[in-house]
Image (cartoon, rainbow, N blue to C red; front, side, top):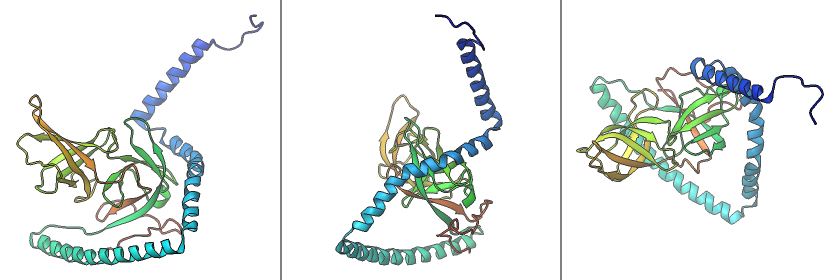
Length: 294
């Protein structure tokens, strides 16, 4: 039976209007970035859902810690004590080398900023879409986090912040297909670009000539070019060097040193000398690992 009264436009016209409106919003956001405030407001509304989704895992970890036996805790405490002593001994050596490096740079008339300020954040959510490598962390603009800020784990560089709101931020990992990072080979200083492949354990080093001195196992570190990442941070280790007769460059693949698929906590870095806002010292948001200013 046909309805007696028909009101409003037809379904086809509604679909066309919706498509036109969607395309207009996409173009406006891409070229003029007028929707950033709206996106931040929506992220604030969705933030409690991310916290609730992460709550079972957090409660499970707390319950596991509560059920640990006294003997296990003693063994863990002893192992951590030995590791702490070892790290302190290594730190003394690094401090001596750092002081010597500064003296040599002073002799060469070079400026050098020592030390970084870091802030610990926890990963709330993962983006598991194909060829997309992003995570959400529980620190945002209220903690001084800014777009473009380097993000590390305990081993190496993980990525950089691409979006922030009041209580959280989105981090683009170095393996994302849209991410590129200026790097150099630590052994010989050869500069190149580490591009993400969309795979969680693979980077590609671009534009390396065939006569370059590149070996499997070489450590790749940040070069500091582009003024985004501080120099000298580990990035990856070369795992494949392949020569293709039809390609003027060699194909070099590297495995990220950071535990991109297993890390629960990350470090947000403020490099001394960068013109970036300092995190506020409000309770609960202060930097727990802030380095001493030189």
